Length: 188
Image 1 (spheres, rainbow, N blue to C red):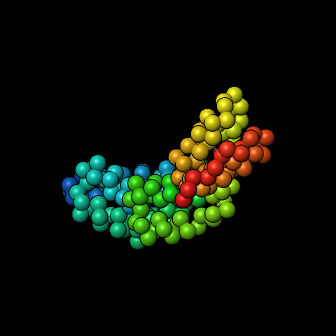
Image 2 (tube, helix red, strand yellow):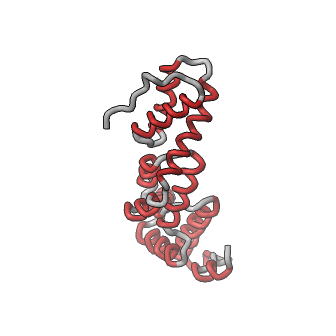
Image 3 (cartoon, one colour):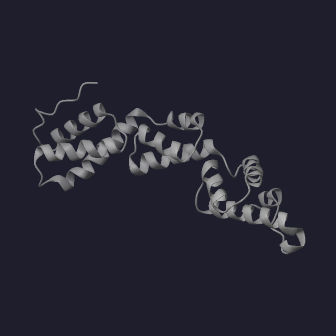
């Protein structure tokens, strides 16, 4: 960690007992936060939950989290942008699934909405195509109906709307030489 940030947050004293139980509790809570943030960025909500689980008093947790926000260690907007970019490119998730994940992580709606605006609809369709192509390799021995059901189900679970699911599945099955004459998009 950068020396300036540690100084700003306040280093954990070598002799915590000399400062009494109040300072000891704060040092422990600060360490919990720093340890939690070491592996990956977290939302403020996730950090609040972690501190509550460790029985850190609410007023102390709020004070420390406010301080961590001041120095830039907790930033829900940056967390949301990074989460969306990572999960959209890595897992191929659509905006709807990403919005649900951000909601579960306690990211404020305005931060989530701003992060989701960065998702290009064309990139979303390309991600769906990539997922279908990859899954199609494993479906060589199943009948046409089963392949369609599995492919559209996979895309739906990843948050794609029905129109995108059926369009991409039809186009990719056509490209792979399958008959898709009976595959119709559902009514919107």
